[in-house]
Length: 140
Image 1 (cartoon, rainbow, N blue to C red):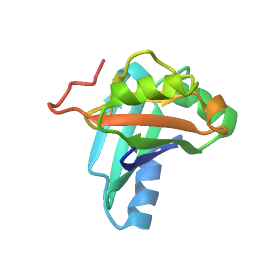
Image 2 (image 1 turned 30 degrees about the horizontal axis):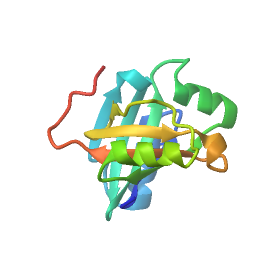
Image 3 (image 1 turned 90 degrees about the vertical axis):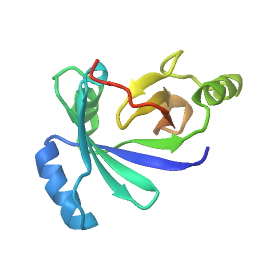
């Protein structure tokens, strides 16, 4: 693992949350992106080498909608940057962790992503993410 890439925060309204984080961080979101495969609208704030990712569900039955219904707004996941997501996935499987997918998915902010089941990580959803060398259209 290289560093904390971002902290994902589930919100009911991305517009309202952007105003809050703009005031706290003293800068605006640098990017909004819709990820249809996860049914979310994301908004990113850069903070040094790390980011804050706001997540608003765009459907009533997506993973973030279910999270909000169960737990309310708050930290959804912590993402760690990796150089080789495939080798990290293999290593973690060998260590006994349950991954939520067999292959990495195209995620927001030009990343390949994979999640570790929170039952294996003291209740925290962990995301692995690797920069994709060429921009990827992640709208599907």
